[in-house]
Length: 270
Image (cartoon, rainbow, N blue to C red; front, top):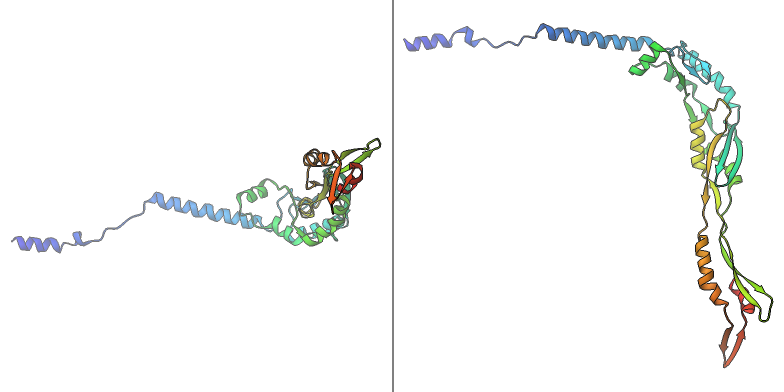
């Protein structure tokens, strides 16, 4: 009797039925909302792409609402004027006050109209870009192509005009007439020089161009120091030069002695 009940329980389909997991209705609602939001965002990004956000300006030209080709043509026209306008460069620092100019075409500077058009009319995938399409764009700096070698070459004449080699200090001797003559060490103070780092100046010009208001691009000259500073020169004068001429020099050789006064041998020490 027990065996029959056990067999019936084993064959009961209720016990053998696999468990089923049912997704709650609220989960389906959340999934649906996510799909709708994602699809709506993608659709908005694609719909608003292909034209510049309203209020967008490039090189002083309002390109808002223009499609890619229109933006490219507008940027290209504005860039042609800038391409013919020399870039003023002012060097300051390290005692320099020099200005010069470089021609963009000779300096390897040009506006990438194609790249700029792509940038301002691309689909608004980023929330910030989408917001600009809705609320209005801003001033956009154009994409710029830079030939670094040409730009450095164009700045080299300016660097040459700025360059000033440092002057090394020295110790000389002054002979004052008298009986006996008096010899005094004289210190010539070292002088700083200056130079323009052409690579750094080129980076600064490339970052600032195009300059719409015609203001000069400011670059800094650097100080070039002498190899020995003034303190070391003065110390050498006191520790070496002054004792060297403090008395007569006796030269002995071949059984003979020759006495030289400081006024006689001091010029050979300078």
